[in-house]
Image (cartoon, rainbow, N blue to C red):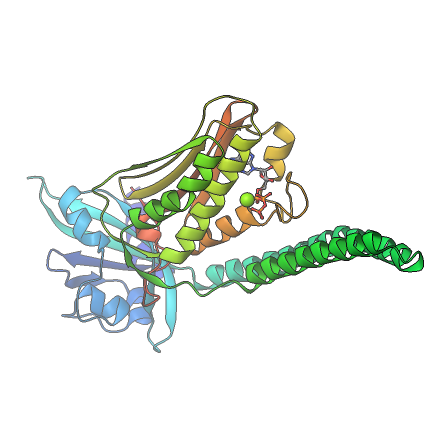
Amino acid sequence: MEDIRNWIHTQLWYQVPISIAVIDREHHVVEANPHFAQNFGDWHGRYCHEVYKGLSERCENCAASKTFVDGLVRQREEQGIVREGKPSQYLVQMVPLIGQDGTIRYIIEMSTDITNTKLLEQEKFDAERLAAVGQTVAGLAHGVKNLLMGIDGGMYVLRSGLEKSDAGRILKGWEMLEQDIGRITEFVKEFLEFAKGRTAQVQLIDPNEPARQVVALFRETARLKGIEIQADLQDDIPEAFMDEDGIHTCLVNLVSNALDACEVSDRPNRHVVLSTSEQEGKLLYKVADDGAGMDYDIKRKVFSSFFSTKVTGKGTGLGLLTTRKIAQEHGGTVSFDSAEGAGSVFRLEFLRERLPKPNGDGQDRTEQE
Ligand SMILES: Nc1ncnc2c1ncn2[C@@H]1O[C@H](COP(=O)(O)OP(=O)(O)OP(=O)(O)O)[C@@H](O)[C@H]1O
Ligand SMILES: [Mg+2]
């Protein structure tokens, strides 16, 4: 048994393809296995942020500092620089060494290189995006085809008006054409806007600001439709790195959907509430309505491109898709609950630590505690 133990101990340290390092409270690397030195170079007398990432200061949001305080085992994805100056991605596990008196003097960090896995993930993501483009183009063709049928009708009326020299019919045909060409223009413009995407302008913003603006924007429209719109904003949410226009667009989409759903409901008092809150690093925007709600079949389809239950020309069916795209650009998610006849709640959720950084660093970090 002793032999096995020794063998495991030495082999583990010398042979496993995992970089193992021990750091002290000042974040000096005090011990490391050969694989670590092979990957990250000479570590003697150097700080951990220097060796892993070539940084002169401690990493922002340093996980080791937290573990020194609370003694929790942490797991994270990090980006570092390996020996030849190549960027690499690795999964690091931090385990505190707790002394008999309860103090934590050292942390063991075990890093597995996941650069290739991440590359495959990216390739899969690109392939999925291409498939989505195919679906989207098919949807576009379908949408335009419906609108072209309207144009056909307009042309028919116009031609018959011309043949009969009927000024009234000519005018009617002309108006039908104008309306349908207008709709096609709108439709194609919206599609291009969606397909092209926009470069996110990430800045430190007050997360409540876009919410306030959107409620103000819809107040009058809601009043005219007899719907009450309210903002319920938690007022101590700290600033966050977000694309304000992007979040504004998401909230416009969600609130306009909520108002549409209230409009088609036959309930006498209808409400839309946009609320914001933050708890344990999770930022939440919630749009709740007591409108028509959705049945099972609609719920399944809401995120498909061009899916809309609204009349042609009113809904393009891109609102929720655009919202999801922007949320994903912020490392966030869109989810909803809905019950037919009772209403719906849409949620935009952002983990603060996954929000984009203006300089593009620190994306895709995860932490499990
Ligand atoms: N709050 C809601 N209550 C009920 N149904 C909803 C709600 N939000 C979305 N839906 C359903 O999901 C469909 C898709 O929504 P989405 O915003 O993507 O497109 P749209 O509103 O139809 O068109 P667009 O937003 O492009 O003008 C809607 O047509 C509607 O059937
Ligand atoms: Mg919509």
